[in-house]
Amino acid sequence: MIEYENLRKLNEPFHAEYERCFREVLESGWYILGKGVAAFEDSFARYNQSTHCVGVASGLDALVLSLRCFGFEPGSEVILPSNTYIATILSVLQLGLQPVLVEPDAATYNLDPARIEQHLTSRTVAIVVVHLYGKCCQMDRILATATKHGLRVIEDCAQAHGATFQGTKAGNFGDFGAFSFYPTKNLGALGDAGAVTTAHDQWAAQLRVLRNYGSTVKYYNEAVGYNSRLDEVQAVFLSVKLPWLDAINAHKRNLAALYLQGLKADFVKPVVHPDYYDVYHIFNVRHPDRDRLKQYLLQHHIKTEIHYPVPPHQQKAMRGILHATDFPISEEIHRTTLSLPISYYHTSDDIAQVIEVMNRF
Ligand SMILES: *Cc1c(COP(=O)(O)O)cnc(C)c1O
Image (cartoon, rainbow, N blue to C red; front, top):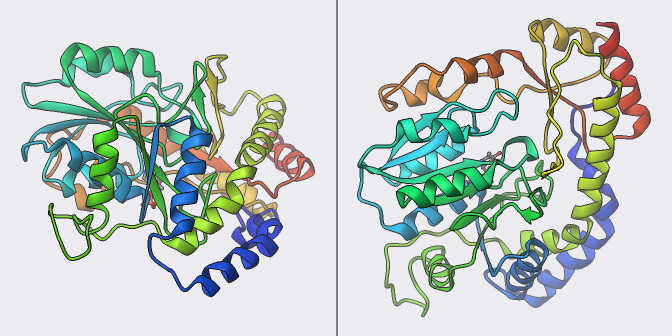
């Protein structure tokens, strides 16, 4: 059986180091916002070529706390892609803001810069871009639109650790880059974890206050904050894995290259363009008979996933919330997309096997 993902196997190469680092935290007796969090924030900022990195509890919180810094009026409108993981939309809703979904580019699956302007109103305050599947959005055009209309930009980088557009890493284009270190992400912890990158000194300081109950000095609260601290144990685990992130991304890119070269033309494959360094958090293909293809692969002992089966605007949770409900491009992607195995532990032989079965379909 070729599994889609196996977190035990993914983490096995790091077990000895995890145990050593865990023991250090255990012996230190310091479990919250200690040296481990500070060290990881420093190394992730350096890795990502970002001025600041602030560790938080999850990717969702990274988005929420970033949005909080702007102090937008409730009901202000935020532009988002219509095909994203629900967390992106939830962050906007948690702050009482109105999500305005915009259809993606059918080839890249990312927010289509050409469609943004037609959705702007006098209440629009920000754009949240999502670098979906590990491919950056077309940030030059999106930033030009944002600048023209005085909009803030937040990047959802949960699937794009190390991805670049025109040589710049995800998380450095907008006011904030929101990262998730959920275990399956390209840089994954052994539990929930997240971080925000930013070039703004004041907002980095504000994020540190917000994540810790709105407090800098213990028991003195200056803002209505959150409990959203990056856990010390997760931070030391992340510091173990971070030096391997480039190797993890390179491995996934090698496996992706095999798929791109080997899969027959019946499958719609991800686009490749020299402006983009894609990190393939997910390698998806599209096929009109997706469900039968998934079943066929399973019969041949290959597990796949669907990212995602239901588009956000059709989720029960979104009923009555969104102003528009017609997103044919997003629906078509959700109906036809299939994610193929592409983990750090998969070998070229695994992928050759998947390709062989796929091409017989
Ligand atoms: C995983 C993910 C998130 C949420 O991250 P958590 O750490 O699970 O809160 C947000 N946006 C996207 C695009 C994601 O893939």
